[in-house]
Length: 353
Image 1 (tube, helix red, strand yellow):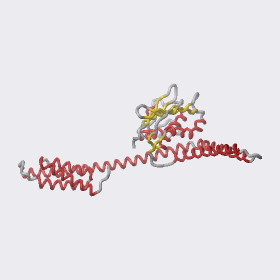
Image 2: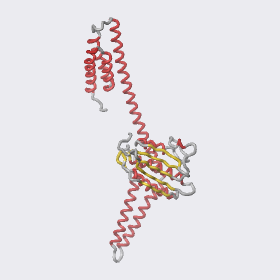
Image 3: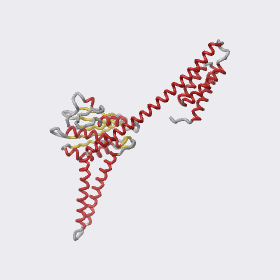
Image 4: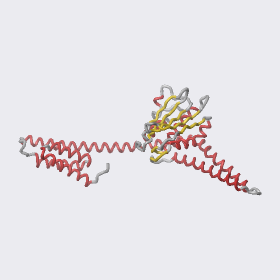
C-alpha cells in the first residue's frame, strides 16, 4: 500500500468526519458514524490524523447532536453519552496505533529474519564449497591441462618443415574450448561464493542440474559413483539461480556421502518431469544407506545430522529455499536400499517472497 503524504492523511481525517456527519444527521446515528470515521482515519492515517478525527467528531457530536430535541434527553444522561463517545473514539485511536506499531515491528522482524536466513545460506554455501576444494581444483585442472597439451600440439603442427595449418587450427579450437570450460567452472564457483540478495529470474532447472553435475563430477568419480539423468522437457520457473544451485548441491552431496561406503552398485539418478498441477517434479535418488531409522521425520530439522562432520543445516536451508519458491521438499525410502528426495516447484511465475 502506498504511503500517504501528511496532507493526504490529515485530509482523509477531515473528509471522513464530513462524510460521517452527512450520514449521521438524517438517521440520528452519530456514535456509529463518527466511530467509523475515527477508525478509518487511525487505520489509514496514523496517530495524528486519528486524534484530529477524534477532535472533529467530538465537536460535531456536541454541536449537532448532543442537544438535539428528539428524542428528549436528560442533561446528566446527555453528558454521559458525550463522555462515552469521546472515550470510545480515543480508545479506538489508541488501539489502531498499537496495531500499526505491531505490524511495523513484525515487518522489521521478518526482514531481519530474511537477512539472517540469507546469511546462513551463504555460510552454508561457502562451507560446502570449502569442503570441495580438492575436487574443484581437479575439475578446473583438467581443461587447463588439456588446453596446454592442445597448445603444444598446435605449435608442433606449425613448426614442422611443412606446417599443417588445418591440424593447427583444430588444435587451437580445442584450446579455446578447454579454456572456455575452465572459465565456466570458475564462474560457477565464484557465483556460488557470491553474497547477494536473492534475484528472481527465469531459470531452467535442467541447466542448474547440469551445472552441478559438472562441479561435482570428480567428487562422484572419487567414490566410483555413476551419475545418470532423466531430464524431461520442462518449462522455466521464476526463481533465484544461486539458491536453486545450492539446493541441488546439498541434495547431490548428501547422496554421494550416503553411497561412498556401501557395497554394490553406487548410482545417483536425477529426474525431472512436468506434473499436471502446473508443477515440475525433481527427484534425486541414490543407492546409499537410506534414511536414518526412526528418525526419518527429523532430517529436515535444524542441527539434526547423521554425519560426524555435518552441521545439520543443509536440508533445513534447502527446504526453506524451496518453500520460499512456493514449492515442497520431502524424502522417501528407496527399495531395496537408498533414499529419494523429491522437490516440487510451481511452473507459474508467481512465487512466495
